[in-house]
Length: 255
Image (cartoon, rainbow, N blue to C red; front, side, top):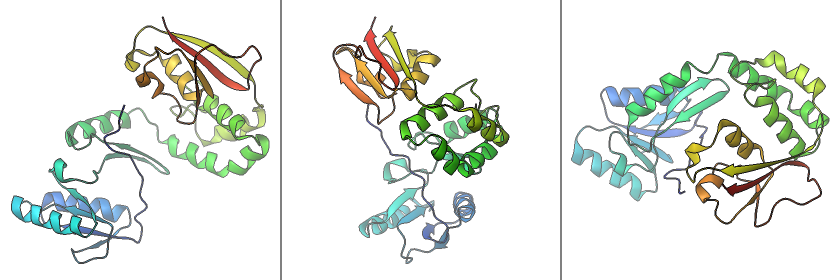
């Protein structure tokens, strides 16, 4: 499955961004850029990014062409076919930022999804993230191996886990760290009922996100494997080794 865009978080504090246009759309983009700490400039600014919120079609097209000729990446408001980048709907649980984009297909849909997710994510989410950041050195000391850290955090942050993001706050991190252990071995077989990744159960999707290695039959579609961690090892062919391997091992086949 090909991504139509690669989501990126860009630090704009103190950096120039070109903003062209007037009216409600330009004002909204100005507020967003100011919130990110950007230095807003006109077309002559030495900037890597530009937002064009000019209502007139021809005037906007000319401005976009001039900016792109300079190598500037452009967002053209309400003209997705002209855009090099789009601006997502944002959920802010500082330091957690959740961005929702539709590739310019529908800003209204992105806003509706943001409003729905806002009700699911508690204010304590930012505190949990900050506590995990502050405990980074202690977590590394307790779990020196990166795979052990990833597995332990994955289990703790899973639904119902000690650090479940929708119910745990920052005060849960230290008790979890005091009790956390090292690596183990888990082997799970998943027999897929469908080639559609949306038919995965919540448990299957969670295991795909945690697995260190995945043994797959030749008939397992790539759309399913796209739901796995990018750095998980994929092994085509037979099932797992007889000797247990550290971490989570999945064997996937079509039922």
